[in-house]
Amino acid sequence: MKKSLIFALALAAVCVIQSCGKEEQAKTITFGDSKGMNVVSYDSIIGNRCIYLDIDNDGVKDFSLDNSYDSLTDSAPQTVYVISLNPKFEFQGEITEKTVYLHCDYNYIEELDKVKAYANCTYSYCDKITDNDEVEQCNELLVYPHETNELLGLDDEFAGSQLFLFRKDYSFQDQNLYEDGDTTYVYTTSYIYHCENFPIDTPFYIGFRSSVKQDVLGWIKLALRPINEGNNVNLELIETAIQE
Image (cartoon, rainbow, N blue to C red; front, side, top):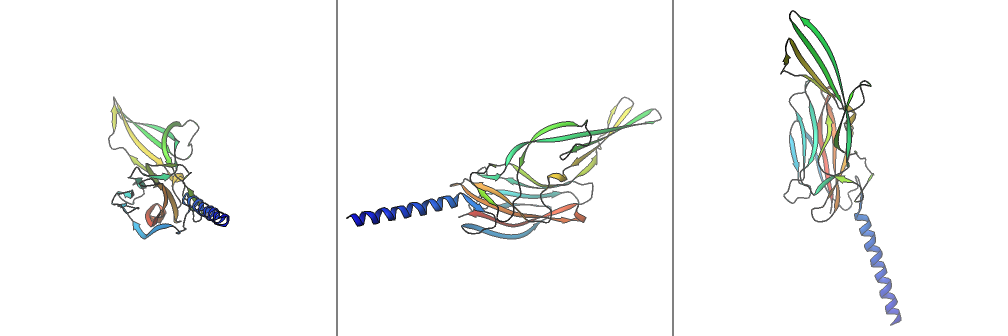
């Protein structure tokens, strides 16, 4: 009886140790390690279109990937972004307060009995242009790109919403001119985004957490491929992965 009891206790201890080991493994994944993951390879270029991802294959759209532009001219904007469509899927990241700097230069030109006032205003999401720039605050999702062999854990911070991967610096002149008395105002607005873009021509991972059935982790592997002499990009979807 004593030997049987000792054997039973030893067996129970082994089961507990193995169970703990599996539980601990489930709380952390390694980017690029396919063990215990359902991995789907795409190697698909997304140019000026939107696609949808059902990562857990349950018939519900989880993310959209959007590469949007009207043209590839230098003056035209382009945005590449990812949206979490399913509230049970959240990016590994945090909502932070973003500082945006507004700088305006004014130039007045007299033309006969009229005055033209040219206002050139720039919104910089990077650095100040001058010390007297106006400051605006906005909330934005901050997500870091990851490399192979970096870790993602359930204890990390997660948040949904829209994630910008690339926004091109651009300028445009407002065609709706404003007149006040003998003065006509002509506005040109510029945006500086380049400091916020993800790596160009280097694959990266975006981590996420799903709580559809239970908390599981996964990734989307992407790359921004330069086109138009590097002024624009195409989005490459390389693979997705989610814990089994």
